Length: 639
Image 1 (cartoon, rainbow, N blue to C red):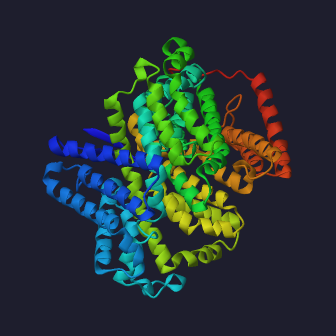
Image 2: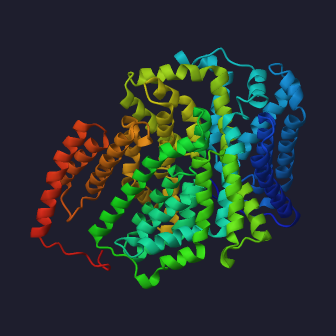
Image 3: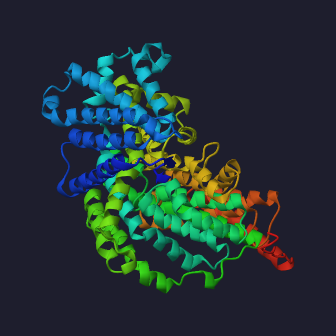
């Protein structure tokens, strides 16, 4: 049984044998090679390039994933191969007829219309196979809305569209399936997924884990802090919450349980740490690249804006873990059980070089993301030869190309399906109406609108991947936030963050449930624990909305002040959540640090001073009591 880790979950399949297995491997390798070549030499015209990308993805999807999950594939070989061939035919038509399509734009032929209908069906079915029903059902709803708009109430009504209007626009224009979302997947996302696959094959995930383990393994609650550091490092190249859980969790969760963390707490910590990987520069989740395209800024600006909130997210988690470990009397691992930092850096430290090259090329030399990732991928192969244990031979290079081609499938399918939704928003005119509707619902006030957007993100995120949630709400909600005075960067980052955090929110918390499987703990209990531990992360987006200095939209002095007060604020929040500082304290005493945290988190000199006036006496009072009282530290066996 082979496991495929995608952007949103763990998909299992019976791997086809014999000739088909070789064909699938060859297609996946060709897929990756095509994108490496276009990253260096430049892409074809947009419609052709996107059609080739989606064709590769759908052919692989139909060959790799069965009609029904859990069934043996041989029953469905013929149907799967037929659907793969139809996918290829639809893509080949776009590639070969590109000049004719450009000349008669707006005047679709019968072939355009019926192939558009076929492509829509193929996209819906391929997405259902890899991501389940929620995303295709949303797309089907909007297609039906396009047909029957006259039956919808009030401002949502429109005159209705014809079969020809809908499927020609979804197929032969850049406003439907081949729109911005699949364009970003075909240019930015795929090359970084390939980069991540090469880095994984070189052993970089072991480097990240051993590096964190050697630094933090012995401190209080050490294994949990190892999870935080290793997940943030691995997240810089994976951009996937569930992938982070599966790569790190099988090692960190048993270590956390070994030193005394309860199973559901160990799973929750790993889930929260892994979710942060999607917001951690330089390589964030796939939606970050789409954000750069929609806003119209270079990707490195998105990464820089996201850096401080991502750091605050991980520091808040570190505070919660430290207080949880102190409250339960949990120690770290013995030094003899841990690798030595000097040996880790000596054996594997050279694998940090490709990441450094990537950052330099993006931020210092202002190379395009595609060129930066291309050269960083070459650097991985080159530096791997500096040590025998990391050397990438021909087989590892082929395995990396194959893995990269397969790992991008979930993102490509989500982007294509989201393109249907966005296309229907455009051609029905709903996108133009929605801003005024949302402003009316929120009464024209920013805070109610932010809460509304957060709830929408979490609800959509229950069944849809982060990328799809972001694309829909970037179209639906972000323009409304901009109308109320937020900068485009701030509005889109807010939507992006809550799309990522939906992985921690029961009843469908994918990262938490993946971690629960490794921790052997109840999924729902683990999900609620993850929500509590990651609560500061849910507040961070509000922090940068009301304090744009945190996304670097202010002077250097104001950025430093905002960061410092936010640090104190999230520390106070961690104290309130855990009910522990120098000693455990009753629930009613949590009110003071919680109130102080909210005041400190909201930027402004007066709110900061009020927060400090509340927090400082509380800290002094707890310190004095800890000196007077003897508080026994629970043993490992009793904790």
